[in-house]
Amino acid sequence: MDCPSEENLIRMKLDGTSSIANLNFDIPNRKLTVFHSGEIDQIEKSVIELNLGGKKISTEQTDQTEFKENKNQKKLLWSVLAINFAFFIIEMTTGIISKSMGLVADSLDMLADSFVYGISLFAVGGTLIKKKRIAKLAGYFQITLAIIGFVEVLRRFFGDEKLPEFSTMIIVSIFALIANGICLYILQKSKSKEEAHMKASMIFTSNDVIINLGVIIAGILVNWLSSSKPDLIIGTIVFVLVIQGAFRILKLSK
Image 1 (cartoon, rainbow, N blue to C red):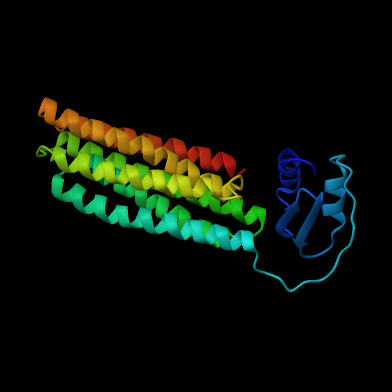
Image 2: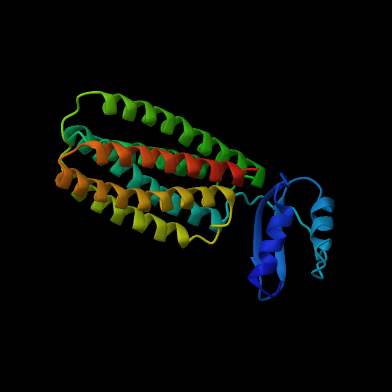
């Protein structure tokens, strides 16, 4: 291996090999250490088929089950989980008090993200197949929340709802935007960001940044038009984005 692109080729080739627990790449020395269970024949064959000059140097038994890369992943995921769950509570509380569907929708999205980061923690150190299964579970969970959200939007649209507090919408969303920016930065630092469960986490967080900007704009329009409709519209858009993100996750999990 003389460049990161070769590392990606090998990861893609070995993707789906359930016996692999961890891949440790030493690019300068052109070495790959594979931590696995069972026979190595199929793994060796897959690497050789790439025609990168690969060959088995040695094999030995080990009791190692924890890896530095996995510890780093867990630390990053715990950080973004804590931030998202905190803002779920903040946005849900302020959304109910301020009568803002946009904030309520975003809080549910934050809860979904917390769920994603939580199950991603279970994926760390697991097989590639397990990580894809977890990404799939996260996608279906997002779709479920979005459907619940659509029902609530319809109820409020045809009901007699009071005007949302636009100032609360804007202020809380600005802080949520900053929090999601921090989460995205933290996730981008991960060396394992190309793995399915980490990609899922970054997709959700990227959607959140767009959503926060939308709620801020909705708050401005609520004040300008003296109507709750912009808040309900942004709530609907939020759930559409949630579903789009969910389908992207499900595509990653194939």
